[in-house]
Length: 478
Image (cartoon, rainbow, N blue to C red; front, side, top):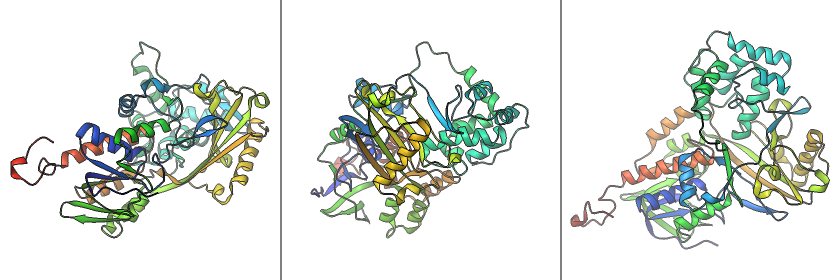
């Protein structure tokens, strides 16, 4: 049911996903600004959502975040969730290749190895593929353009097998994209920096490992989660922002510039604000801006998205047994519908120990939307057929959860950085963009960009803007 929208605020945030909620949180907690969040869905949180399957909490969007991300770590702590952070259980991940599951070789970074021997031991590549990777040690330097694709960085150095069967699935598992098209500068800047630091990728990776400071305590796992599910993060954000300021079932239907800022139309009335933050997907922001700024809208509409979905199966443990490891990824070259699979009850401690095994399979990536023509039953059958072939997993599920995310994963293709520069040049001072489409598709990137956006808004709201027009109040602290 549509709630009554407030008449005015310092800032209106359009989009109540993790980016919009984080922006509103930083605006309120760090800058004491009055904020209204407009969310078109009947619940906040966007793709960060936790549902229940066979009595267990299951994340149907992201189920982990980077432990080293400073802004997200601080946010989790401020929201009182630090004690709920959990690391994954021991056990490595695999790649399905050439009819078998192979352990991901140790010592690599997004598939870039620092040694050749682990590649050989994993049997992920053919002997010829390993030998080709070894040529990186002697090949002359590769000249790279300013914004190369991931393929431009990797394939000339390490060969097609490393690229197809190691780098592609690892990049695709995070971004649902093709490393042939994705910008290394925008997607994996660390890899591009490594490539530019020396002639050989393998030797540069080795120097990176050797120069890293020696830990004095056991290192934290790179990815962590929240016991009870990631939905606890967005629930806590809503509470912190104020549930009366996060309006669900309240889409922004129009935008209009005013002398004092913006007027945002909603089904329940107009909300006026001095600054406007669009935290919705780029294509949704483009639709809102078509009438007032078609050039800006056109740039936003140029950001591509991939359709993805996941299918989670609940299985009886006595029919499946214990799965060793955390899951596997599937290279696009295998042409399978399944992109990857997470063994949730073998990965997260808060899901382990019951009589149920949870297996979550991801489908969909850039260039592969076969699943979109299937209904849920057909999609589940196709996923189960893949699991039977790859894992010998033929047990009937006791419960199933299908989550479709159309146009969900922004693609940072070559030229993305230049597009961001054009967007920045087109934005008026009172309009701001944040979200997965711009400077980080993961939770850490979204929260970090939300904090930077909030800081920019606060800086541009001058003391005069934050007070009445009475001259005696100019410069007064709010």
